[in-house]
Image 1 (tube, rainbow, N blue to C red):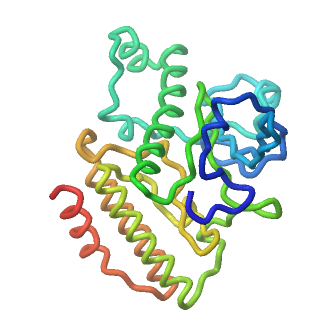
Image 2: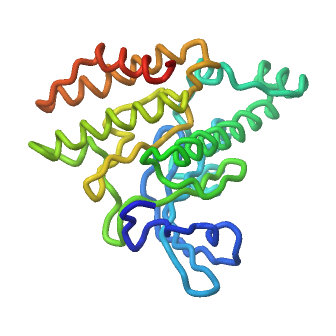
Amino acid sequence: MQNAPSSAVPDQPDWLVDEPYSDVPVGTLRSGKEAQIDVIERVGDDGRRCLLAVKRYIPRKVNTKGQLEASGFERASAFRHDVEYREGRQFRKSRDRRAVELMSSYGKRLLQDRWTGHEFEITERLWRAGACVPYPVSYDDDLYVLEYVGDRDQAAPQLAQARLQGQALVAAAEQIVDGLHAMTRCGVAHGDLSAYNLLWWDDRIWFIDFPQAVDLAANPQGINYLHRDVLNICGWLQRRGHAIDAEALFAELLASGFS
């Protein structure tokens, strides 16, 4: 990892998965519409340690508030409109496809598992391509472990909360454009890009939250999602005083992504 702070994932992160370790809970960082983010400290047998984020996808259907609290969540999932994002993601078994189409209990569980695995796979794909995303450590069912961005005193703020001005805002905008190019070259559209799923830390932009990311070739709406991402983030930057021609950037992304 480039310029990693002491609490971040180390340059050689294999021990985070392969070697014996213990996890110490630190606290809840954020509870959003589809997931809750907790922070843990992972400690290896040899004393190596770092902070990690644990993203737990919130159950989409709970019978009682007590059931939700017993599972360690603060509130129920509010995210529902995921059908278009799932286009292009196939279930191989006909039984699984039917369960998803009927939205049976088994089908909902399949979707929950697929949602988690999809985010891990997309983030790993981008990380290996050199995009500035948190290192994806592991996933299992509704739980996704990834690099924590920040230090022991504070988590990295969302770009919307960073209050950047002047050269810092210019630098952030340039990094956002670079990140969009990197994602497009990987054939990925974020699908929900905004100043709330970009982090600013150590003078760097970090792209986060990829459960709804789509494959530009496989998803029929992929190009539309990319266009919406560009319009959203360029509009936010313009409101902060840094203008970028959104349509020109969109054209550049298409040219670099499909050349």
